[in-house]
Length: 254
Image (cartoon, rainbow, N blue to C red; front, side, top):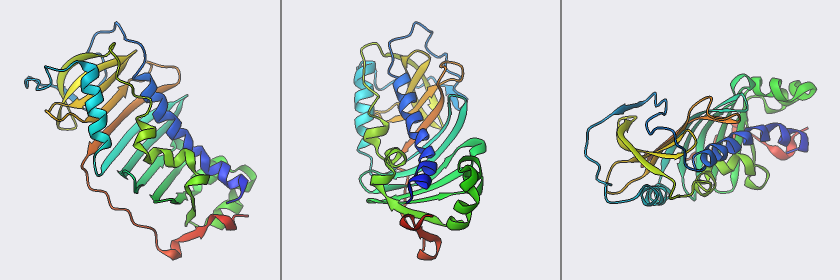
């Protein structure tokens, strides 16, 4: 892939940066804000007893991260605001094998992503090229012609980091400043809310085998990052390469 086109496609890597920033926000110093202050549009109060009562918040988070990383497959969905730029994520991940899904860049278009092993397929829509490629937009659109661009993980590191849970969850560090919050539900799953920093909350499945299922940093809580991420461990994921007729080799880019 030419250096110019690689640079345009790498804008999607901002989404990966955004994930990391949101995770870091959730691992900041302890906040004096009241537990339960998260906006939690998909959360509701629950009176279910907490099976994690015998563990500290940091112990629960450590177990929840380890259990999520051990899942054979999962989905990750999110809506983020990074320095005023909206991003959406919808990815199915098979740790160690790859991922598939889409990255939305607001008015800058959308990108479909398929990662299988070390091979990456990126499909950017016309709106993306028009918003990012400037005078090269028409040439890029004609060249790609709606097809997936085939390249490698070495040239798409920022984007493919989204498929690597060790990268996505790396900034989340259990801390003694974390505190247990209310019992609630997140997308129909019983969850324990954990205050993890300044206006940041983690959600852990309220079971004897806790898994990280959500993270929230409400809009306005940070100048740089806000949003919600949710994880569904165990959700089925199928990785399928696009047909050859829908693929163009990145090395042929003008």
